[in-house]
Length: 333
Image 1 (cartoon, rainbow, N blue to C red):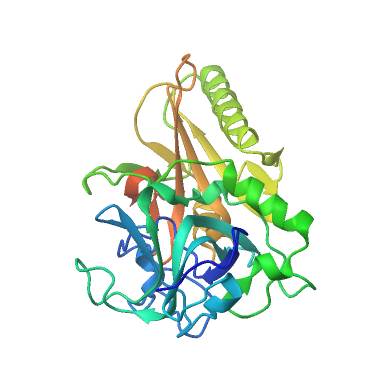
Image 2: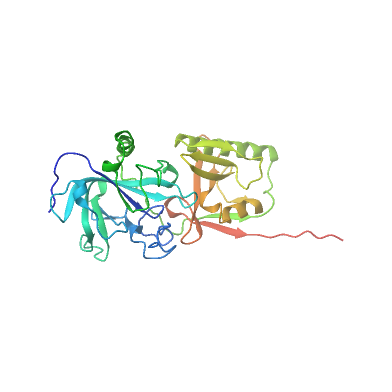
């Protein structure tokens, strides 16, 4: 049993692969550049780092041992009261960001297989009460961690921030973590909830002026949503990129295509938008924002992103996006 030498807050950064929810969903296995991560494979043990078992979270980092004496331990097994900050590289731009944290965590000196009786095969590096854990939603992961710069993390999966960061930078991290108290794990709904998208070249028959008003309202809703999260949003609607908006925050870039509906129903995307959604160089940063009831006082915004493990498009709570492909032809004589 380890004890703390003093009341100093020790902060440990642990670097893992990037995922949406870290609850073990088959379409959400972590993606990263470490050799131990196989894209879409089952060997990424951190895939369940934010899944709750018996009111606790059990976290894994790819390291056989952690020098807990640098965290104030005086005995050899584990140390308590650590602020563990999880970081990962955004697969779209590769910048490193804070994706979540465990407050008041227990850090083990060695990987432990016996901490969780519900899943005894789990490899555990740290654990904490679920009420002390927080997962940052994907589009809110904007706290950039400079990599390979003096005083910041290098290539190792562990970084003793309370030893290496300046007091100013360490204070920024602690203040950021202190701003969110909730667990914030998104609930998962039934798998049969879906939204169908049709890929065609034209638009459904409707009044052009009304359609224009709906699209403007949908753009306004989407811009307001991202600005409220702190993103800087620019319109590129006239550039024919295959998306309407570009949002930036601390080095991250999102490409956002906006679709508006006056009520509720399926929407249509053009071949240019479809290609941008699926291009390898843009799909990880691409967002499809659909606004239902766009002209009403209570519009409904649904945002879809690409899930690399399943190569599918996923919305809130695991909602799948179904693409129905349609083709056409022109005859001349």
